[in-house]
Length: 116
Length: 108
Image (cartoon, rainbow over all chains, first blue to last red; front, side, top):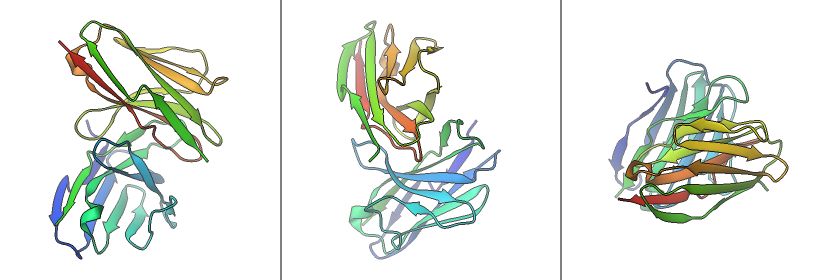
């Protein structure tokens, strides 16, 4: 069964509004979670690494004030797209791994965001 | 800068064919390499490779890592239409990044 749950699976919002996406590890504690974005016919692009209890590490070119990441517990990380614009429309996927550096990542089912 | 290159970008074959997908990487503090299959939604895990030269096998799929050449291959034998997907490799170093993927299309 799924070990990482992502919610919502699909969201449509108007320009200027904010959208929160949740990522939960269901049966394990994840000190680190990763957020990716995927545009059509492209690969997953790492946006940020979410660390429990500390600030997220953002990849170059990703605006930290626009994509707010909160990792308040060992099983939950949230990504908030603030003041969304149509160009933010994309597929957002979170992932987490069980403790240990050599554990495979498990992915959530992704969130399809459409900004109108 | 970490990078991952997958080849070919796209592959079209007929059922029953055997395919080999390539992944080469340069990452800081390499730990392992992951292969994923992505159909319509999130990627599904296929293999994790940590040691050079040891083949991992799951049904018709197999994969091997070459740390000296900084590369890995994914083989699929006797392909089926259900194998049509994007195959992603992801080396794990200080962070986990994905290659562009290989889009495999298997026709009957």
